[in-house]
Image 1 (spheres, rainbow, N blue to C red):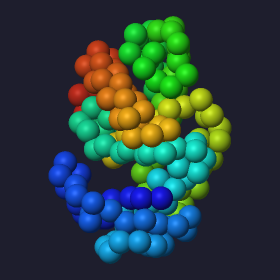
Image 2 (cartoon, one colour):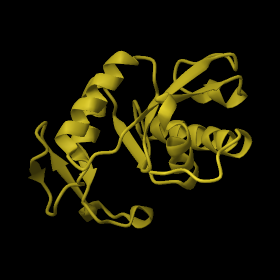
Image 3 (cartoon, rainbow, N blue to C red):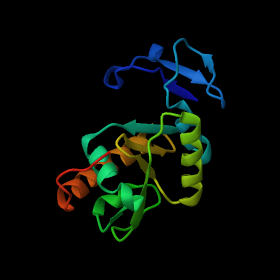
Length: 169
């Protein structure tokens, strides 16, 4: 799998800022340290047979991940944009977006991600509480489409659902 090196500005990547890693996250090609979240990306790549995994630290994914954390996730339903997700053919689709507790122990978190994805085989993404959104696709084009759709929907949820004035993290 090819992954970005840690600490890189994702808006202006060049080929030398990527490394190729094996199933254990060990660098096989390139120079540099792979992303600290490599274990998470590997779980998604192998479990979902994803050709691409994308992750954001957006405002709306962070707000919703905190505000909805006690529910363990958020339902997205009734939106026309849902039809852009792979395999979804109607706005009547109901998409469960799990919210997981963030953890600095990436191997432990990877195990939680693996279990969550196994329990939610239809999910196209998940949120890490206070951190951001992860999604994937067969290729980069599909993963990016999922990312754009989900970020759009998270902003709708964040702007329309009543929220408490202060939330403790």
